[in-house]
Image 1 (cartoon, rainbow, N blue to C red):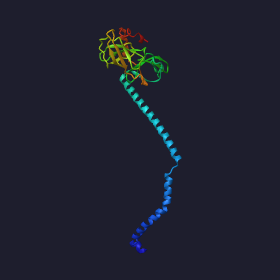
Image 2: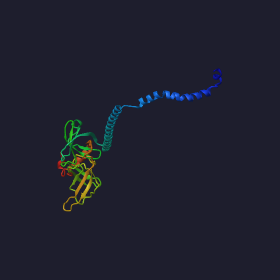
Image 3: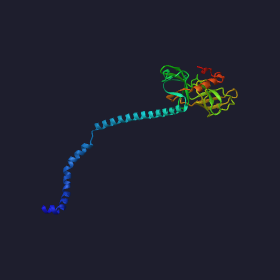
Length: 272
């Protein structure tokens, strides 16, 4: 043993014996290893069903959360667009949210969550991120009723942005259509022309986009052509609007222009 300890004469014999004994150790330990493996890997059917139900619930919850996040992302995009529009306007504005609509298909009115407590007054113009939306017609301390520009009883003075031609855009009761009144057959107006608010009448400030011309049909049997336009505002989609206080100098200019008789002769209904 001393010689083996010093000179390792039996190392080769030990290696050979360990190879021969290894299968014996393996087979002796096999029942214990197999039992442990089966215990770790075999789960009852009830546990699997319980895990499946829990995973399904988590999946449904995560899908609902994802839908909410998508909705919030879309709302954030709308608000960013509205904020950009408010920065471009230059007048004093206040953001408001729609929380009710008139269910009468022939009356295009909405209820917004701002009222006289927020200095809102009757006849005040409303915009969304794309164009003129309507105007307030009734104000309470905490809310206001607004009429959309497509309401059959609404009309707004406009002008063709390309030529400056003035006209009246009247509501038709359809969310995607306005009628341009009293346009001569030989007037310089064409499909695709953008209509902006003219400021006449003193209600809507000058230069806000109102609609785009979609149809021009001269009628030789009548003195006026049939002209239709599509509103620029997303009247059936927007949830947020801007209430506008036009600058004092613009308001004074509109009233001065109106005093010359260019607007009130055509728009008695707008003198509210």
